[in-house]
Length: 139
Image (cartoon, rainbow, N blue to C red; front, side, top):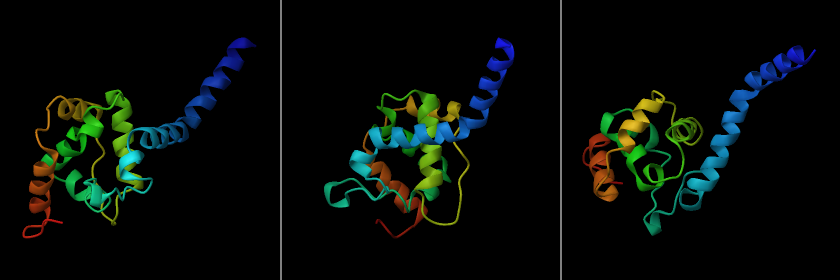
């Protein structure tokens, strides 16, 4: 009887895990990102916190941009494990990115790799990436 009950509980947990992962990612966003980037990702451009929504997918489609999204201090220095940061960044790409394009989801190995490489100046790196995705523009 106990084995059957345990099996049912494990089965229910497995079925619920995508929903739980989404809830955890939302909670992690609220705790680690929303204070600066706001609930919708629009940020405070007038205070130096950029609106990330329109650049998420273009950045995530190029290697340097993929690194940048993990290397920014809010990501790289957060207390989140690499696994939870991976879930969070993939949730952000899915839920907050504007446009109809998509980007390949991050892997834990990729997050671990980029997180280990310090970003010297996020503003300079962002300006360089903006030039790469839209030459002649520096929004």
